[in-house]
Length: 430
Image 1 (cartoon, helix red, strand yellow):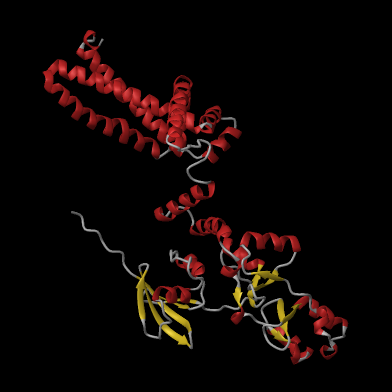
Image 2 (cartoon, rainbow, N blue to C red):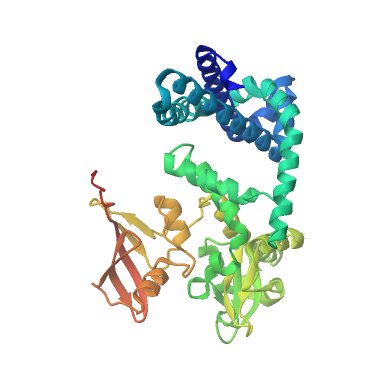
C-alpha cells in the first residue's frame, strides 16, 4: 500500500504523525500533573472543561491506556512512512537516515518539547486538551481495556495478580512526596510544609516520642505541707502539677492551680487549713505504647489535657499533654507563662549549640534539617546510638552530613552538643 503513496505525501503524513505524537505526550503530562483541587474548584464555578477533565481523570487506567495506545500507533505509523519516503529518495541507505532522523525528531519534538510546554501550566493545558482527549478515549478506550485485560490474564498464568484499582502510592505517600519536592525546590512557606509533615508523621509516633521525661517533670511533694505547696504552685508556669508521697515515682494525684485557688478562696486565704490531697484529682495513666492519634482521641473523649506515661511494669516514664501532641503539628506553642529554656543557640560561626535533651524532631523543624529520628528521640540519643558508646566531653563525630562535638557531659548523660553542618561535596563536571 505504501508503494501507492507519493514520497511527498508520505513526508506530509510524517509531519502529521509528529504533531499527533506531540499531542499525546503533552496530553499525558498535562492530565497527570494537573491539580484536582483547582479543577474541582473550577467545576463548582461552572467550568464545563474542568468537569470533563475530572471525568477523564476518574478512570485513570482507561485514560492512560488510550493515550499510550494512540501514541504507539502513531509512532509506528510515522516511522513506517518516514522510512518509505527516505528510501524512495535515497535508496537503501534511506532506512538508516529514517532511523537516525526519527529518533532525533521524536525525542525532541514529540516528547521533550510538548512536555516542557505544558509542565509550566498543567491546569490550563489540561483544560485546553480535555475535549480532543475525550474523543481519543472514546475511540481507543475500549481497545485499551481489552489489551489490559489480556495482559492481566497473561500475568495470572505466571501466578501474578495486578490490581488496577489499587494506586501505586497511598494518598499519604503522594502528599508526603509532594511536600518533600516543595522542600527541595524551596517553594511554599516553611511553616506550612512543617505543619503538613507533622500531620502526616503523627500516626508514626507514640507518646514516648513527645512526652516530658520524668527527669524533667516538675512535681510537688505532698509532705511539705499546704502552705509550701501553694507557694510551689504559684511559682510554677504550669497549671497542672503531679503530687507524690514517699518517692517521686509514687504519683498520688494531679493538682490543678484553679482548683487550689478556689479552695484557698473558700478557706478565706488560710493556706494552712487546706487538704491538698482532697483537692487533687485521680491521675490518668496511659501505656508507653499508645500512638499519638489514639492518645489525641483519648484526650478529646475524656475532655482532659494531661496524662502520665507508664511502662510495662507500671513505672512512670513521663507525662504527655494535649499541647505536646498539637505542637507536633503546628510547631512550638508558647504563652506568656512559658519558661524560655534556651535549648538551641545559634553561634556566629554557623554552628548550633543544643542541649542533649532537645528532641531531634524539634531541631529538624527549627533548622530545616533532616536528621533521622527512627533510632533515637533526642539529639544526645542520636549521638550515642551512632557512636555506639557514651562519649566524653571534647569528643567529636561526623555522620549524616554533620559534625557533632560533645561540649558537656554529666555522669552518663550528654548535656550539651555543638553541631556544625558540613558543606556538601561538589561533583566536578567531566
